[in-house]
Each structure stands twice: as C-alpha cells, then as structure tokens.
Image 1 (cartoon, protein in one colour):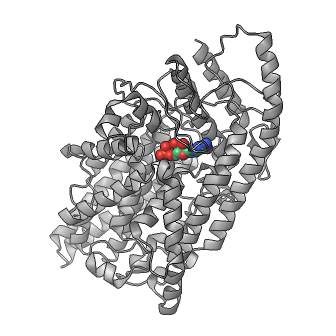
Image 2 (tube, rainbow, N blue to C red; image 1 turned 135 degrees about the vertical axis):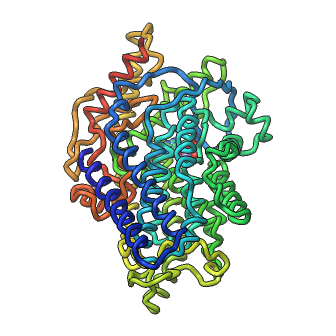
Image 3 (tube, rainbow, N blue to C red; image 1 turned 180 degrees about the vertical axis):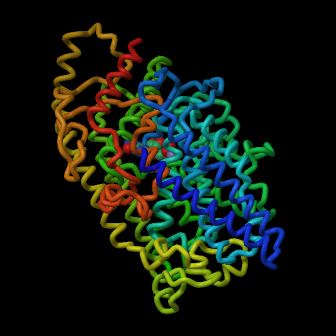
Length: 582
Ligand code: 5GP
Ligand code: MN
C-alpha cells in the first residue's frame, strides 16, 4: 500500500512540476500559444486533483472485509456448461441506490487509465509533440469522468452481487487494458477504438441484477419485456450506461464529434452485446472462420473477442484469484437457486448449493469454454500483430521502439488519415516499454496456457475430494437433518486450515478441500488482489521487483502476491457465515 502511494506520488508530481515549468517558460518566451498554456494549466490542475483524490482513497480503510454486510439480494449467473438453456422463474427486485464505499472502478477508469494517458500526453507536450488542438479536442472532462465512474459504481453495487459487481467490472477493464498492451493489438487500434474497448469493459455488466437472462425471461421481468427476451441483461447494461451520459455532468463523451460519438457507440454496443454468453459458440466459430481467410480481421469482431476473453479470464490468472472468483460466482448461482427454490421452481444448472459439484463443473468450463477462447484470442492476435511487427522491423517504425515525431506506429496510413485525431498509441514513440518490439506473443500464449492448465489440475485434485466430500456430506446430512444452515453451501471439507505452498511461495487455498464460498457482497476487498490488479500495470517499470517477478509467470495478473491468503479466505468465510446466520 505504501509502495503504491509512493509510486503514484512520483507519477503525478513529476508531470505537475514539469507542466508548471513549461507554463513559466511560455510566459517568458515568444511561444505565446494561449491555448497551449491554458491546456497545460488545465492538465496540471487535473493531475493535482487526481493525486489528492487518489491519496485519500488509498488511505481509506473502510473497505475491509469486516465491514461487508451480507444479505440475500437476488444474485445472478449464467450457466455455461449446461449451455442448453434451461428456463426458470424469478423476480426482479429493485433496491434503493446506495453509494458504495469501495471505489475500485474510479481507481481503474480514472486513475489507472486516465492518469496514465494524461501523463503520457503531458509528457509529450513537453516536447511539443502535440498541437494544442489535439489536447483540447480529445480531453475527457475530469469532473464528468468522476461523476460517471461514481454512478457506475452505484449501479454495479445495486444488487450486491458477489460476482457481478464493481470489482468484476474493474477486473475486466484492467484485463482488457493488459491484453491490448501485451499482445501489441493497441498498435492496430485507433485511440477511439481503444477508448471504446476500455469504456465497453467498464460498463459491460452495469446494473447486473445477479440473475441470468433466462431468469428474466421466465419471470417476464421488465427488462425482458423491454428487450423482447433478446440479450436482456446485455442490452440493459449498455443502454443504462448511455442513459447516465445523457446527464450533462456525467457525459464523458461530450468532446467527441458526431462521427466519433457514433462510431464509439456502435463499437460499444457490439462489444457489450457480444458478452451475452449464449452467442459464445457462434462467436468462436465465426472468428475461427475469419482467421482462415486471407483478408484482414474485422476490428469490431476482434475487439469483441478481447472483451469476451477478458470477461472469462479469471481461470487464466493465479489460483488464488481464480479460486476466489469461482467461489463468488458459485455463490451467485446458489442464491439464484435459493430464489428458485423459494418460488417452487426447478434449480437452474449449477444453482443448487446442496448438490453442485463445483470442481467438476470448473473443469468442464475450462475445457470447453476458456481454453478454446484463449487459444482463439492468441491466434487472432498473432494474425493481426505479426504483420505489424514485421512491417515495423523493416521500416524501424517508432512503434517498434525508435523515438520519432508523430509517428503512426503500426496503424495503417489509411486509418490514420481517415481519423487524424485518433492516432495509434505508438505515436511519438515515447513509450518504448509498450512498443511492438517488446511484444512477446509466444510468451503471452505460453504463460496463459500454462496457468490455465495448472488451474485445471488444481480443480482435478479438488474434484476427487469433492467426490469423497459428497459422500461425507450426505452422511452428515443424515445425522443432522434439522440443520438451519440453508444459506451456505454444504461444507464438504475436512481440513479447512490445511494449507499448501504454491510453487511461487505464496500460500494457496488448502488443497484438501474447502469448496466454500468466500466473502459474498464484495468478494475481493480493498486489501485484496483485484483492487491491486486493477490499478497496477504489471509491466510498469516502477513496480516492485516482487510484482514483476510474479507477473512473469502470471500474465494477466496485476500482482498475485497481494492476494488474500488462505487464512483470510477461511476467515472471510467464517465472518460471512456469522453474518448469514444472524
Ligand atoms: P458476464 O456475465 O460476466 O458478462 O459473463 C461471464 C459469464 O461467464 C458468467 O455470467 C458465467 O456464466 C460465466 N463464467 C465466468 N466465470 C465462470 C466460472 O468460473 N465458471 C462457470 N461455470 N462459469 C463462469
Ligand atoms: Mn462480465
């Protein structure tokens, strides 16, 4: 935490100082570009404001697990494995909005992305690489960004979902960011498209009700009626997010011109709708087909695949993270199951907390969904990025790491001419650390696949325990039929406290069982990994050695070293149990 604060201070104070100096120089010299000065002042004040805000947030300890309140709000889930659409009934309940204490989306969207961008822009401005009009034209008004991000957080917290909450949004946003950088695909995309990707990720599950599309359809919920049973939730996510921006003070896209606004909207709609998992197999098939063709890959399709992959990326992260996300999702499933039971309906697949075989279902999920998706993702990135790398090597393009002015990097000239304001992020060549030269697609793929495999192996071990535990559980059930522990899934465990050492030295959830649900309302606390994942870019040079070390084996993680350890998981479980029982 202290390290984080120091890093942020360094990041933010430097550009503020430089900008102030630049303003002074401008005042003395004859480069009296009024607009430029105004914008430098503006950027400096923005950085100051963000710095103060960030520091305050980092010192905020209100997000501890101990503060989490459990309740039985309806939760969601969409069953992948039994992807034949079983249909059930449920109720859409609206809860009064309340402002969450946790500000992870603000962290991700505002700090992680905006500040970085501003920093880059202002750094480049020192060398006068950007005309003032560019800065003016494409800035996102900061107060609007803050209001919008806060409203997003409120929406993500509305149903108190264990899984589909603001942390999931931040996690997916960070992962999309990571994929764009580390596959080099950012050099293929325009800035408008990059903005669309980040924006789509941030809003993609906005106001998720914690129940599945089928649940909405069967219960004839308002949204199901509104969207004619088609991608009900996904339509709502994107529509409701855009509705927010109808309010002037939340309109982060206020400075886009008409064409850009429409283009961004079209991309965002396509991407978010493609997160409807019922389109998964079709999406995979279409993309596979595209890769076999000679012609280039459709941008919207490639971007949709990135978001889709990020959305189901936790099995490609460290076991600690993956395990926690899995348990949070399972709790969502089970709460839907509780609702179904209360309504006298059949359980949806994976929603019966008494009988669901979590480990076994995860093996299927990884085998049939996750692996093929990530394999396709890496194939697609290779098809797109390899030619860019070749081209850049030949021409020694700045996107390949050689500094230069106003370079378009890997972006085709046609694209750049069409959209001069939105150049590749390779422009200026000032950020060699993210240049095409540093892209290691093979390493990216190998790491991902290695982690996915390792996680699958862990599930296999647990599946064996699960089989055993199922029998133990059944015996226990016979012995205490009057147990009131209806809220938590059956504990199939024997040795909760037995922990094992992971290969990286971190403590992992006990191998011999613990298929328990952890922390329900906000699955990963402020102290936990997801938060850090969100705001850390694993490859940033100023990260600690430990972080760099970790991510060398864990490509999508910000920093598994920060993950909650198994004791915490057990503790969280105990706390939650107590809350549930109360
Ligand atoms: P989302 O609802 O987050 O936009 O799309 C992701 C969907 O993928 C989830 O709703 C859920 O159905 C599925 N999913 C994500 N992670 C897991 C997992 O670990 N296990 C299973 N069975 N499904 C998952
Ligand atoms: Mn999602």
